[in-house]
Amino acid sequence: MDLGLLGAHLRDHQVTPDRAVALERAGYGTLWLDASPPAGLELADELLDATTRLVVGTSVVNAWTADAVTVAASYRRIEARHPGRFLLGVGIGHREVHAEYTSPYRTLVSYLDALARGGVPAGRIVLAALGPRMLGLAGERTAGTVPGMTTAEHTRRARAALGAGKLVLPGHFALVEPDPGRARAIARSAPPGTALGVTNYARNLRRLGYTAEDLADAGSDRLIDALVAHGTAAAVATGLGAHLDAGADQVGVHPLGDDPVATLLAVAEAVLTPERLATR
Image 1 (cartoon, helix red, strand yellow):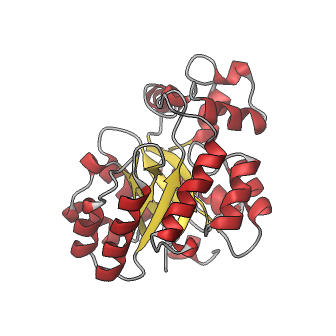
Image 2 (cartoon, helix red, strand yellow; image 1 turned 90 degrees about the vertical axis):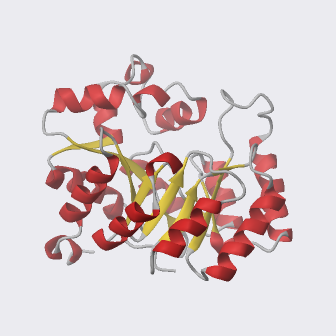
């Protein structure tokens, strides 16, 4: 499975088959369906039908809302039609959203057990793992991790925890906006700024050395700059490249701004130059 150096993160209302084709032509290896796609995963079929080599992944199906038996059946259907082009990202969601949120580790273990019984190979699953225990589970039971709201330092730690041979596929926010003040304001009015109160993300950022002051008021400049690659397209490319330098197999681009697809295309043009590719 060739995931490529770049992944594009979009929600279901942002992506169409035509846009998937444009992203494939721009050089993206993977199109990640963000948030909590439904267990039927019908959109993955549409996007794979429209493209020829693009891998489609989920970032991520939610263990609380997507029935594992249904997800496994969806995986088998997609794999039969498009062998080797679908990667199942799984996550535990957030306690702020799910009233039933208890025992996240044991819940994910049970979910992975159900997927295995349903015929989903461990090598086609990645976990949205942030902390050490979840990273350990990702290494033991899946192909690796697809974390979000992270920094290049987290990527270094994830690579050290998982070792060689496992996938580290971080997602990173990107905004082509040369004015730093305006870029930070845009970031604070959307994720990541609005997501800093989410327990899983906040705990992980504290492990990475960020303080309560960094997390307050939609994020300090230091934190926003670590979570969002902003500036010119070339500057964004450099920021994203820090994850690759830290050991990522791919960096996924979470576009911010009014036109997410235009941002993705500009980023691909800046990242996938012969000069930059020569260093990878």
